[in-house]
Length: 361
Image 1: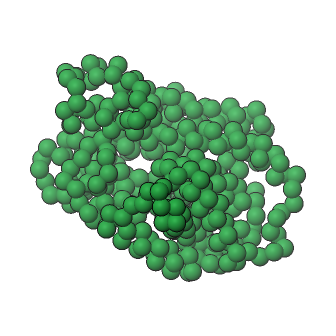
Image 2: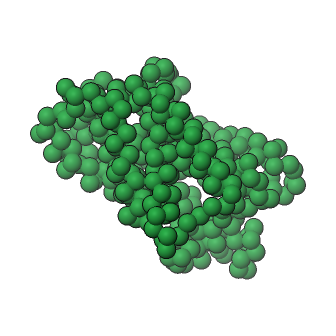
């Protein structure tokens, strides 16, 4: 099965872009581990990225899972997923995530903790209403993505076995603009699960679309053929989303018509953004790059480390009282630098540490 180099590129770029996204979260109007002076431009920037960054990650993860299932026997696949995903998840929740909670409590003056070891037991205080961890209680933090991948991969295993017995659904029927019908399941997922933030059904559908991208040539080709349309209407719907966010528009469940329209807009915009990105990258950058190949071995490691470095760097840079632009830039620099040095000098040289961080040799 031919490797899709544009998927490797998308995976790496999307993970690297999580650093500017989560750095912007320090300055938006939504709760986070540390907060600085709110900035509307940062808020809209973060919100625009939120529309497509995780959807792309789940879709490319679906592609990777399909390739993995195609190349490994069933027992090896389960072992690989548990080793490469579940072990790093557990390690990160115990070691990498708690410092974020500690920074949150000392920056917000919550509790009376003299040092990190004094705080550490308090991290395991479980409260469902504060599972986000922004007040220092237990949270999987950004590692929810890895946990979802573990679950999705195990569910996908029997789905793959079933698909192998089926004929190609679209081989002789070009999809072209009918590709937009695939936005409907995403709309329904947002409506049915009440627009929840980390919607498992929404993301599982995108994960399965990754399967279709590998299996069905017509599905992949349709993204390329409709890329211009997707980009045009993606910009229009994104502009609408950002205007609503700028105006502070929100809708409750008591108004079903507005609620359905609101969720439909968000789901359609996500699909259009994903479709446009896949279409253009597939068409123009479907090339193998050695740098991308090397970075692709460490995408999980980068993902695991990135938010903790952002919170740590942001906490100390915040004390310098610099402008938003300069602070933002410095947090980016120190976060990327911390990730690089950790991988280069701590994680990569030691095989056992590589396993804990999901890094490939």
